Image 1: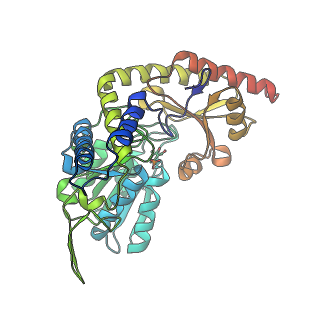
Image 2 (image 1 turned 135 degrees about the vertical axis):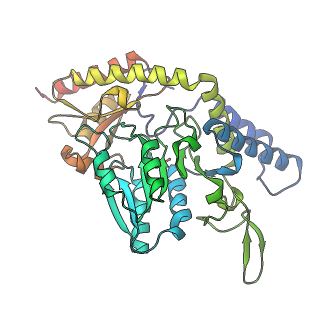
Image 3 (image 1 turned 90 degrees about the vertical axis):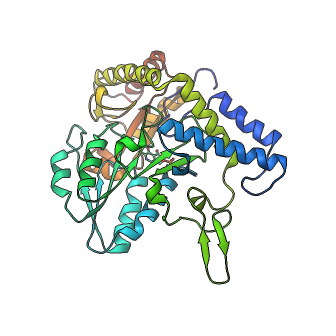
Amino acid sequence: MKEGIVYLDSGATSLKPVRVIRAMLEYYEEYPANVHRGGYPWANRATEEYERVREKVAGLIGARPEEVIFTKNATEALNLASAILEPYVKEGDRILVSVMEHHANFLPWMRLARRKGAEFVLFGITPEGYLDFDDFRKKLTPNTKVVALTMASNVVGTVPPFTEVAKMSRRVGAYVVLDGAQYLGHRKVRVRETGAHLIGFSGHKIFGPMGTGILWGREELLREGNPLLMGGSMIKDVGFNDYDLEDTPQRYEAGTPDVGGVIGLGAAVDFISDVGYDRLEAHERRLTAYLYEALRDLTGVEVYGPPPEDRTSLVAFNLRGLHPHDLAWYLGELGIMVRSGGHCAHPLHKFLKVPNNQSVRASLSIFNTEEDVDRLIDGIVRAKEAFRLD
Ligand SMILES: Cc1ncc(COP(=O)(O)O)c(C=O)c1O
């Protein structure tokens, strides 16, 4: 990375370790063939490496390789989850979604509810950003067929009690879909222990390349599921008027996948394993607390969401009197990269009545330091002076 830059947008996408870039380069230089097609040496190696990454990802999350589907991002993974559950939802059923979802775990369910004539019902959060359990409990009716919940909010950082939510949801026979996009790069996940049926992850937020994502699902469910795409490499046989789909995971990976990307993702998994979740989490917890307290100490700054011990490593805030885009632009001029806007979570901003429905977000990762946070705080102080705010 260029000297002097402070990257505080790992929530959007993480920086990529050199080994990830090298793994991709090696693929493109040494065996740049398609997978699951040819029988020549490059094609065999590409297929072997690609499938080895599936095993690595499965190991990382405590799954079986057949339960790991490669997608291009978490959005595609969650859309695929809704396609898989579509046949189980009928008119009059309820789809229950938290108000703090990213649009990727919100819109597919809203659309599915509309298509099927099902109810789309939101459950809320408290003003502090915690999941409103009473509201959830009240709305979890016997006709609830799907419950969709994030494992960590991309705005307020909240880690809701997703295992408890999954347990209660299963009791009424609902399918549980979790969004792990903001979680897996920061905390260890054992997918089966969550109680969920399907979980979407971004590969590019866990140090992997752009264009990589993962859907994990229970094999029982994936065996019969509807793919999102139809085409090559996902079919056992095609007749003039019928077809026979492949088993999971192939049935969900139609067409040429991002082979280089997946191979890079494998190196990202190695990176996480080498660093270790304990170290990752400890470092980020310490730094998030430092960031949160420093922001809270600044007059004119409003921080959204719970205290650091109950969140992952990001903090959204606003500076009174300055539009978030103006603050992010000003910080950018100082070499400090933060994100501003609605963060694809418009309902949450509206629910919390955040001014302009937008905020600035600083998100941290393993490579960030206290000096990075100091630079951000200093940048905000300078912005207050430059824009003559009190
Ligand atoms: C909580 C959450 N879910 C889903 C997504 C979508 O992820 P992707 O960009 O990989 O589609 C994001 C991306 O920011 C996110 O923060």
